[in-house]
Image (cartoon, rainbow, N blue to C red; front, side, top):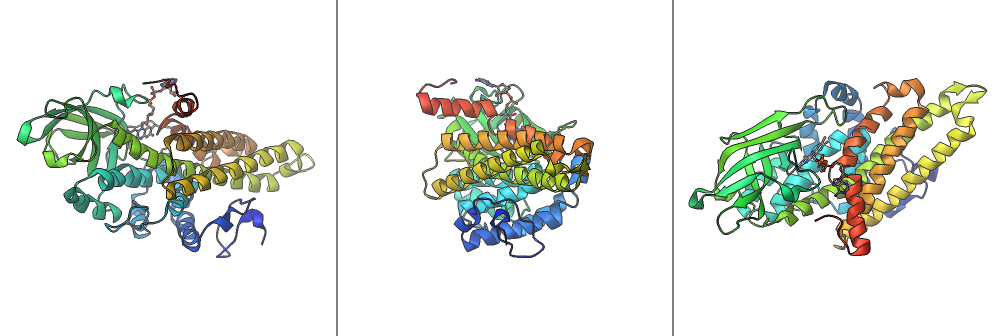
Length: 404
Ligand SMILES: Cc1cc2nc3c(=O)[nH]c(=O)nc-3n(C[C@H](O)[C@H](O)[C@H](O)COP(=O)(O)OP(=O)(O)OC[C@H]3O[C@@H](n4cnc5c(N)ncnc54)[C@H](O)[C@@H]3O)c2cc1C
């Protein structure tokens, strides 16, 4: 069995590139998780994902299975969650994104952006109410931070939460580009408090669908992340009880800590997208004949493959080390920024080269590289753009913040 393809536990199982035998660094539980999700993606996501992408729909029929496999809030302990270690969690994200970035986004939002903040900052009642139902996939969540005019700078948000004493809060404003907005049973909305003891602070509010003044609208005409539902949240004098505030989330820092968890998953996910692209392209150039032989015989083609394999191998090292640091409780935001920026940027560049190597066939949805290429444009922008992550790193290196 060649090391370059990683071990094969089932003869029919997909085996991505593993030139440095990173597999040897995983424990049995991590390998089992990886193989289970890998098979799920091969059997249940890949056969139908191009149609969903074309139609702009999310494969909702797979949600109960994802829940059954423990993929929602997978690294949370208790409340019906799988309680995996952070490397196993990363492998889940990697395998899901081998299928499609939209599928990984669904699990990322559900777990890292809604279940995690409820777990970390919520009251016991909020945890009991939402976490088991979300782990079972019976309740879907969304995370409303971005606004039409405030993306990279969420601290400038205009959405307000007017304090109304014992009557709770009144939310007013709009959120945009929200993954799962129209599917969600509960939206975690971030808003600036007006009045009361927290005046001026940004806090997180759990808004249930059906609350008067809460509406969602789907965003159409996307050419990226099409197999993921994106939408707007409109809050029009939306009254919510005080019990809907996350008690432990008292500033924008809490929102950023959720984003860091989600970004960690993206670092891994990008490796899955790279692997999908590389495998498709490798297979193609070995079989496509031009001039005197297969494309793979030509030196420029081999150079491109060598560069792809190098970037995948480097990206794999980054996420594994990041996972170790997260397990040890030593992960820092700038470490995540480095890996998010590198892995997504490299995945995007690789998908662009890969699409070119597939020639005209590369523009067909029958091939997955073009779909990954389009998806990765979103992944490059959301959860902190490529350049914002450079500025986070710049701040760490110089001690000088380039933005407030
Ligand atoms: C499909 C999709 C799903 C999403 N899902 C969610 C979600 O679930 N929840 C949520 O809250 N948000 C979500 N987002 C929003 C996403 O996080 C924002 O789009 C992102 O933060 C960038 O904000 P923006 O689009 O307003 O771009 P802007 O902030 O306007 O940035 C535009 C450009 O300017 C650059 N720029 C900005 N500031 C600086 C600076 N100081 N110096 C140099 N360059 C700068 C950026 O790097 C970028 O290149 C999603 C976005 C997409 C596309």
